[in-house]
Length: 268
Image 1 (cartoon, rainbow, N blue to C red):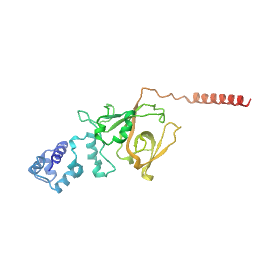
Image 2: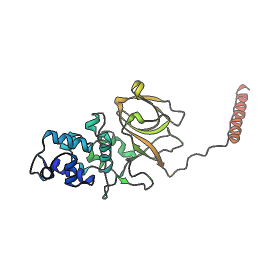
Image 3: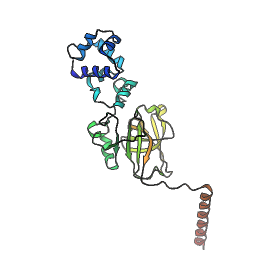
Image 4: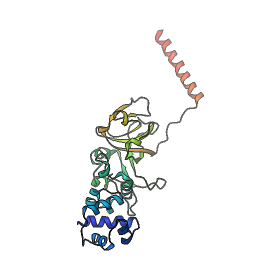
């Protein structure tokens, strides 16, 4: 048996706070047998591997090939909750992520200049680990976040060059209509839009801008690589003030009067 399997068994047992006696009893085996597995003295058969996999909610592939102790807390929790990509299928994958010295998830920052590289490197742990990182103490420690710098005016009043932070969405069926998401697409890269979820009906998302000058458009499921639910944004700019209703009406009326004057001059 490889070192990785033995270390994974020991890691998972200690993670649950179990002694060798306790786990051996749960798995219906002798403590000496379990100790032999963990210390590379003996090798478990397929039946034992299946029982270990089922008890810890970790797929056999992950148990045999991934050093679980090297994963972040978020990734391990997702596995334990049933989101192991080897169990759920290839359409779901383990998120490439980074952790700090205390094994807490970082918030990686994808600046405007890095967005082109992120389009191709989003799944590469070596690329992700060189991104700048930070933390926000008011966000949940039990969720995974990433921050992206946006460009353009399609999401005004959120200004150009603002940093938008999103919570990783693993199950895309949970994407809610009329909420904002950061979506990594195959062709357009990172886009920040309000979303209408049509994945169940016709395999598409409809993306809307807050700025009414931009038309909505559709993207197919095959074009989507990552989805992050918008949680907040940071910007040095203040959004434009919203005019009170009566002031807005006065402004429109004044514009109409100016337009009438221009029309009269043209007619003369």
